[in-house]
Image (cartoon, rainbow, N blue to C red; front, side, top):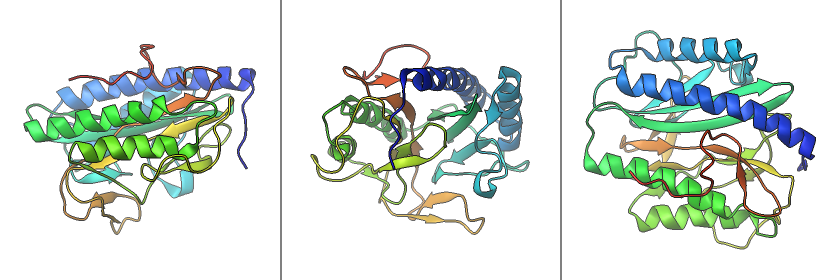
Length: 261
């Protein structure tokens, strides 16, 4: 069942996602400027900032996930588990996926940041992944079909020489971290449910430099590319309105603009 949110509920989601956006920006800056820091140290910082804000970590304990922050490095696509022995190195790209719960409502967002100097091709991977998110968000309009989001992400990504992960999707969000509908990052346009005002969606393209194929490691969480080529991940929580979609998990209100680097 898809839950349409009232304005009161969306306001609660705005508050949760504003906190999330501010914390994720801080974590991203630390990760990108602190080679040698462990992924567990990033997780502890994220949890500390969440609790200080008055919110709760959304991921910790969710289906048994042991941490508050997902940290996925290089060929790791999503759901990387922080640990005390894994250190971030110059030349890495680091995907940070964070969720919070505030007053019964969830926020969910992800970014990928470079650590020091990276190759031009990896810079392009990050840029195209981020831009593909905004391409998808532009289609999140009342009256459009769900797969218009999917098609916009896939077509833009593949035009630029990369591939979209097919095993994991975006999702609805609200009183639960994951709600219907699932939002694939691939597929033909004009299919699926018709989007309506009050829908709140977490749109999250995962884009690989090589093949779209992935596998889950033995820890049953961390997803990696099968060819071990780099992957990037961006995510925003958005609300469908009568007009432009509203990005809830953003600090600067530059909704639906491709971000140039």
